[in-house]
Image (cartoon, rainbow, N blue to C red; front, side):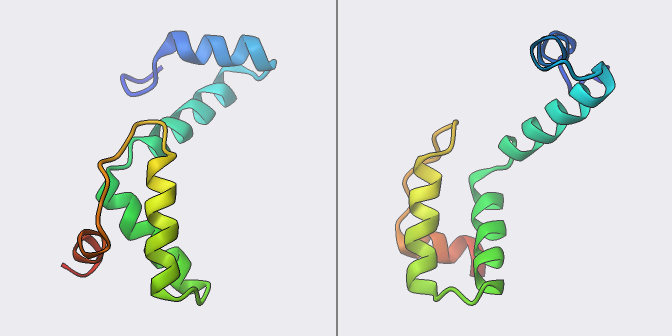
Length: 89
């Protein structure tokens, strides 16, 4: 296992799902990478995704704020202005 992926977590996932350890390691790495994203990285990524889907900015800011509040590691509450500054600078 690499330093980034805890071996005990990989063993647990492999044992609880029946996945081979190599596959479990990839799953754990993918999930920890996803949730390792900073709040600013998440805001930029989601804004770009939602814009590609033609969602209007007024709705985007509301959706991002809701999604941030539901992330496993709580992000600080951002105002709409702060969200805009993360994306646009």
